[in-house]
Image (cartoon, rainbow, N blue to C red):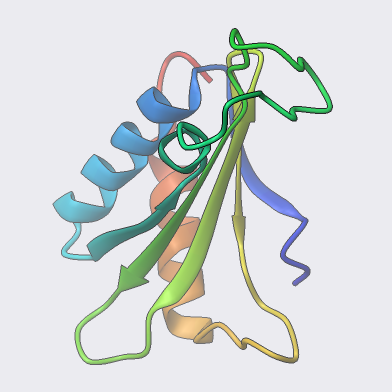
Length: 118
């Protein structure tokens, strides 16, 4: 799987979509750690270098989540959102392999409990 291949697309702002996903994962016993938030990081910038919007009204967001299943190595899940849409991707590259069992659990959780706002 390529880290750029979305496993889920939601028609919701990124923060709402991330909260929904985190809630679903918590319900099935997965633990989540939020390690990066683009909007939080960009507040240190005086200007917005966004290639899509280029203004302070930019709603682009990228959130990096580590998904833990017991003692297994975490799987990195990236949420990328703009224009009130959010895409989730599992990172699985030669440099950073995703545990196939955790990755499959992630896919099952998001496919079995899709929200009404998909």
